[in-house]
Length: 634
Image (cartoon, helix red, strand yellow):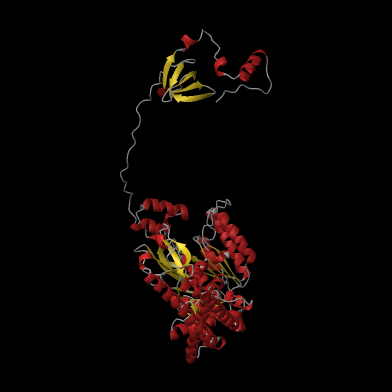
C-alpha cells in the first residue's frame, strides 16, 4: 500500500468500501485501486459509480451472490471428470443468481440507466438449470432422473422388501430362539438375532455377533438368495447414476465459456455496485472533473468523521492561486481540513464519489504528503529529521500536476531556522507550479504568503468566548495562534503574559491583541506537601568483625572467613569455598575470632589470594614486572 494512502487514511476508506463487496474478485480490485491518470478512464469509472447509485436508488439492492468456486467446477467439467451432486447443485444455484441479476438489471432499463444494459451480457442458461433441478434433488440423483433409474430403484425396493419378509417369517417361526423381536441389516445382509445356544436351530449364514457374544446375527437361507440379486441391482443403480452425472457434466462443459463470462460480469458488477453502496452510505455526490488546475469543494466533510457533528468545509484553490498557508490555534482543525481536501481528491481520482455537497476538481499526477511527527526510533529519526526526509522526497517528485499537503511546516527545530526552511520550501513548491496546502504557526510565513501573488493565507476560526475551535476555514485571512489569549483565559497572570509578549515581540504592547485585561493579576498558589529531612547524620557503625574471623552465614548456615571488615553500610566480604560474597553483617554470626585461629602477623594472602596473585606479589617485592597487576578475585 502506498504511503500517501495511509497518511490520508484512504486505506480505511478501502476497508469500509470492501465491506460492500461480495466476491473475492471485487475485494481484491478494491484494495488494488489507485488514482487513475487517464481522464477518459476516470470519467468512465465515475460514470459507473453514478449509475450504480441510481440503480440502487431506483431498483433497490441488486441480488448479487458470490460465484466463488464456479471456475473450479468448470475446470473439472472441461477436463472430462465427473462432477459431484453437490457441485451440480452449486452450479444450478449460481445460474439462478444470474437469472435474478439479469431480471434486476432489466428493470433498470426502464429508467434509461446505461449500467442496466449489462443485462444483455448475462446468459442464465435456463435449460441447464432445469435439467439439473429435474435430475438432482435433496443432495442426490432423483428417482425420475431417467426411466431406467426409476425401474432399478423400484426393483431394489421390492427386493429389499422380499428379503425382510423372508427374514421376519423365520423370526416369527422361531421366537423361542431369538434374543429380540425384529430383524436388522448387518454389512448389507438382512439378519435375525439368534441366541448363541440356538444358532444351529436356524438355517442360514452367520454374519456377525454381539459384543458380549450372547447373540448371533444370522442371514436366513430364505433371504440370502435375494442378496446377490440386490447387489447386482445396486451396481446397475450406481452405473445409471454415474451416467446421469456425466451427462449433466458434459452439458456444463459445453457451456463453460458462457458460464465463465457470466462469472466475469457478475464480479465486475459486484465491484461497480460496491462503489454505489459506498456513495449511498457516506451520502456522497459525483465530482465534476476540471481541465484547469482548480479545486472547488462546497460543504466538504472528512468521510471518516460523523457527518452529523462534522463542520462542513468550504474550499477553493486555483485561478492563479497555487498555494494556501493555513494558520490558527492548535486543535483548530487545520490538519483535518487539509486531509479532507486531499482525501476527497484521491477518492474522486479513484472513481469514487466524494463527501461534498458540490465538488469540481482537477486530476493530479501524484499526491505528496507530510503529515504527523514521523518519529522513528528504529531509524533514529527525530521529528524534524523525519519531516525533512519526507519533504526532500516530495521535492524530488513534485511537478506542475501534483497536489502537495504539508502539516506543521518547519516544525521540530529552532523557530528561526524552521521559519527560514518553511519559506524556502514554499518557494520551491511555488516554482514547481504544483497545488499545495501547508499549515504553520510562523508569523513570518504568514507575511511571506501575503506578499506572494500565487499564495494566500487562510485561517481556522476560533470561539474566544468558549475557547473552542469552530473548524471553519476562511481563505484570504491570516490566522493567529491565540496562545496568549487562551493562556490568559485559562488563568495565566498578566505579568507573565507581559513578559512573554516582550520576549516574543520585543515589547509588551503587543499583548493587547490577546485582551490581556481578562488575565488574573497574580497566580494563586495551591498548597503542596512539604518534605521531612533528617536532622543529623547517622553515626558510623561499629561492627566487631575483623579479617580472618570465622563466621556463620544465615539463613543457609554456611561457614566462611571474613576477607574485608564491614564498610560504612555494614557490608562484609566473606570467603566461601571457591568464591567471595558481600553480605550484610545482620546475616553473620561470629564463630571463632581470628586471633584464636591464626598467629600474629599471619599472611592472610595464603587464605584469600590465588596462587597466581601470590607469585606475582612475591615477584613485585623484588623487582618491577612490566604489564602485570594484581587483581582481586570477585
